[in-house]
Image (cartoon, rainbow, N blue to C red):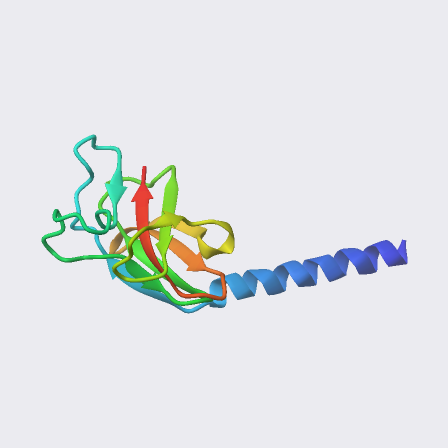
Amino acid sequence: MTRALVAALALLLVAAECEEDLEGFPQRAVDRSDRAPLPDGTTWISSPWPGQVDDPANEGLIEIEPQAGLRLYHGLGRDPVEVQCYVAFDEVPARVMPGAGNACEVHEVGTDEDGRFVVIRNGSGGSFFYRFLLR
Protein backbone atom coordinates (compact mmCIF):
# COMPACT_ATOMS: atom_id res chain seq x y z
CA MET A 1 0.00 0.00 0.00
CA THR A 2 2.80 2.42 0.90
CA ARG A 3 4.64 1.72 -2.36
CA ALA A 4 1.47 2.38 -4.35
CA LEU A 5 0.98 5.69 -2.55
CA VAL A 6 4.60 6.73 -3.17
CA ALA A 7 4.28 5.78 -6.85
CA ALA A 8 1.05 7.79 -7.19
CA LEU A 9 2.65 10.84 -5.56
CA ALA A 10 5.68 10.54 -7.85
CA LEU A 11 3.39 10.49 -10.91
CA LEU A 12 1.58 13.59 -9.67
CA LEU A 13 4.90 15.43 -9.24
CA VAL A 14 6.02 14.48 -12.75
CA ALA A 15 2.68 15.62 -14.19
CA ALA A 16 2.93 18.95 -12.34
CA GLU A 17 6.47 19.52 -13.66
CA CYS A 18 5.37 18.80 -17.23
CA GLU A 19 2.48 21.25 -16.91
CA GLU A 20 4.85 23.99 -15.72
CA ASP A 21 7.16 23.29 -18.64
CA LEU A 22 4.28 23.63 -21.13
CA GLU A 23 3.22 26.96 -19.69
CA GLY A 24 6.78 28.23 -19.26
CA PHE A 25 7.96 28.11 -22.86
CA PRO A 26 8.71 31.47 -24.49
CA GLN A 27 6.05 32.61 -26.91
CA ARG A 28 5.41 35.63 -29.08
CA ALA A 29 2.21 36.91 -30.62
CA VAL A 30 1.60 37.36 -34.34
CA ASP A 31 -1.62 39.05 -35.46
CA ARG A 32 -2.94 37.89 -38.82
CA SER A 33 -6.58 38.44 -37.86
CA ASP A 34 -7.04 40.86 -40.76
CA ARG A 35 -6.72 37.96 -43.20
CA ALA A 36 -10.27 36.89 -44.06
CA PRO A 37 -11.30 33.26 -44.44
CA LEU A 38 -11.00 31.76 -47.91
CA PRO A 39 -14.07 32.08 -50.18
CA ASP A 40 -15.49 28.80 -48.84
CA GLY A 41 -15.93 30.62 -45.49
CA THR A 42 -14.71 27.66 -43.44
CA THR A 43 -10.96 27.77 -44.04
CA TRP A 44 -8.35 30.34 -42.98
CA ILE A 45 -4.64 30.45 -43.90
CA SER A 46 -1.85 32.40 -42.23
CA SER A 47 -0.12 33.02 -45.56
CA PRO A 48 -0.47 31.86 -49.16
CA TRP A 49 1.65 29.08 -50.54
CA PRO A 50 5.22 30.26 -51.11
CA GLY A 51 5.56 31.90 -54.51
CA GLN A 52 1.91 32.94 -54.84
CA VAL A 53 1.28 36.58 -55.66
CA ASP A 54 -1.93 37.00 -53.62
CA ASP A 55 -0.06 38.24 -50.55
CA PRO A 56 -0.36 42.04 -50.78
CA ALA A 57 0.78 42.57 -47.18
CA ASN A 58 3.86 40.42 -47.88
CA GLU A 59 3.08 38.26 -44.86
CA GLY A 60 5.12 35.18 -45.52
CA LEU A 61 5.84 32.15 -43.43
CA ILE A 62 6.17 32.62 -39.67
CA GLU A 63 9.36 31.54 -37.94
CA ILE A 64 9.22 29.70 -34.63
CA GLU A 65 12.51 29.06 -32.85
CA PRO A 66 13.22 25.70 -31.21
CA GLN A 67 11.45 25.11 -27.90
CA ALA A 68 9.40 28.28 -28.39
CA GLY A 69 5.77 29.04 -29.10
CA LEU A 70 3.51 31.29 -31.08
CA ARG A 71 0.17 32.86 -30.14
CA LEU A 72 -1.37 33.29 -33.59
CA TYR A 73 -4.38 35.61 -33.85
CA HIS A 74 -6.52 34.53 -36.80
CA GLY A 75 -9.50 35.75 -38.78
CA LEU A 76 -11.52 32.54 -38.98
CA GLY A 77 -14.32 34.09 -36.91
CA ARG A 78 -14.71 31.06 -34.62
CA ASP A 79 -12.57 28.51 -32.81
CA PRO A 80 -11.06 26.10 -35.33
CA VAL A 81 -11.86 22.40 -35.14
CA GLU A 82 -8.69 21.59 -37.06
CA VAL A 83 -5.21 23.15 -37.07
CA GLN A 84 -2.78 22.09 -39.81
CA CYS A 85 0.87 23.11 -39.81
CA TYR A 86 3.18 23.21 -42.79
CA VAL A 87 6.90 23.69 -42.16
CA ALA A 88 9.91 24.74 -44.20
CA PHE A 89 13.61 25.15 -43.51
CA ASP A 90 13.82 28.56 -45.23
CA GLU A 91 11.75 31.73 -45.17
CA VAL A 92 11.32 31.55 -48.95
CA PRO A 93 11.36 27.80 -49.48
CA ALA A 94 11.30 25.70 -52.59
CA ARG A 95 8.80 23.47 -50.80
CA VAL A 96 6.89 23.07 -47.53
CA MET A 97 5.91 19.84 -45.81
CA PRO A 98 3.28 18.88 -43.25
CA GLY A 99 4.50 19.51 -39.72
CA ALA A 100 4.87 16.35 -37.70
CA GLY A 101 5.77 15.25 -34.22
CA ASN A 102 6.78 17.90 -31.74
CA ALA A 103 7.54 20.47 -34.46
CA CYS A 104 3.85 21.40 -34.37
CA GLU A 105 2.25 21.05 -30.93
CA VAL A 106 -1.15 22.74 -30.60
CA HIS A 107 -1.42 23.85 -26.97
CA GLU A 108 -4.45 26.11 -26.84
CA VAL A 109 -7.38 27.41 -28.86
CA GLY A 110 -9.23 30.35 -27.43
CA THR A 111 -10.26 33.97 -27.26
CA ASP A 112 -8.83 36.86 -25.24
CA GLU A 113 -9.19 40.65 -25.27
CA ASP A 114 -7.14 40.82 -28.49
CA GLY A 115 -9.17 38.26 -30.44
CA ARG A 116 -9.33 34.58 -31.38
CA PHE A 117 -6.05 32.67 -31.28
CA VAL A 118 -4.24 29.34 -31.37
CA VAL A 119 -1.03 28.63 -29.45
CA ILE A 120 1.44 26.44 -31.28
CA ARG A 121 4.77 25.26 -29.90
CA ASN A 122 7.83 24.13 -31.81
CA GLY A 123 9.02 21.51 -29.34
CA SER A 124 11.76 20.30 -31.67
CA GLY A 125 15.44 21.19 -31.63
CA GLY A 126 15.35 23.09 -34.94
CA SER A 127 13.99 26.41 -36.14
CA PHE A 128 11.25 26.22 -38.78
CA PHE A 129 9.14 28.56 -40.89
CA TYR A 130 5.40 27.83 -40.65
CA ARG A 131 2.22 28.19 -42.66
CA PHE A 132 -1.02 27.42 -40.81
CA LEU A 133 -4.40 26.29 -42.11
CA LEU A 134 -7.39 26.45 -39.76
CA ARG A 135 -10.83 24.95 -40.34
